[in-house]
Image (cartoon, rainbow, N blue to C red):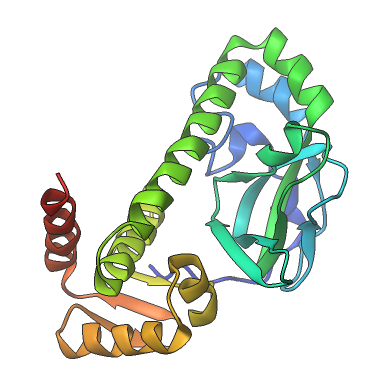
Length: 248
């Protein structure tokens, strides 16, 4: 099954939390049906966002957490020199906007990569619900923990010795994230550009393009624009595990 964006209909954004296919990944995970109904009362479902639209920008007043129903987002910040630094990518079932809970404004920006449906959860109402619903409170702790783990994983990723290791680890991460959504772990689309991947991994776009060509030559994958088929998944895992082992 391909992870391709599709045309979103109005009915697609009206699905309740209890009927959402992503409930096992998102905030409602582990909550009772009644609790999900309560959570559903505070969720704002907007019209689908189009590529290039911002969910929020750095400096905007932090007022909501956003859960992605479909599509993909890119989080980034702008350096003092005016350069963009990619911080990560948000896929269906994942949330963005936690950095707005700290001092009242978002520290990063979130932009849409492909047509996306997003659920908005206002901080104030979400906080009320966390007090009322222990299951939701536990899930918020899980989400925050995942965010911390993701940041730590990024530091480890950038600390890997070679560019090959970084790209292999990135592809394995995407594979795992798609697999958790019931999609193929070996065949998927990358919603981000090669430039975004390079920015995220600390590599030049020319290096990323060369690595994809080398990986294809070595039968680790086949690539057609943004469509990826991982033909050498065990070998990719061995590359990353070998790198991790050598650093112990």
